[in-house]
Figure 1 (tube, rainbow, N blue to C red):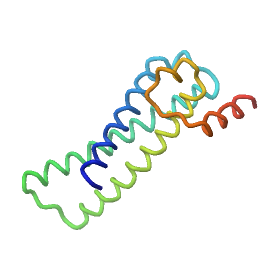
Figure 2 (cartoon, rainbow, N blue to C red; figure 1 turned 90 degrees about the horizontal axis):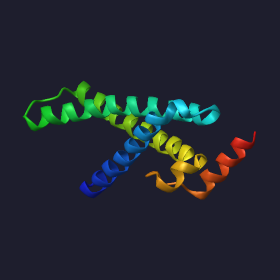
Figure 3 (cartoon, rainbow, N blue to C red; figure 1 turned 135 degrees about the vertical axis):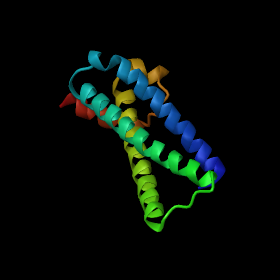
Length: 126
């Protein structure tokens, strides 16, 4: 991943984190599927943070010149992959919430696409 890709990824993840913080502050006000999606987003954010912290810890060791074993490198690659998957799941969940809650739609930081918005409307009608 290039430096620009990493920076864009960090900015997107920071935007998702801000959206999740907003949801966390208001989660008790939510009901039904909104509550479920908010809980899911919060859990994904917690899991992502743990994995992300592990990656940065290893990065710090490498910067200090510490060697990692082959097993540790393999673990880090697996963690990095899992972190990417969690970040994608978090973005989808956050978009779903932002699309389904009008108060978040205009002021939220998540990118809401039209297909996701329509999917939420159909799901809410059930």
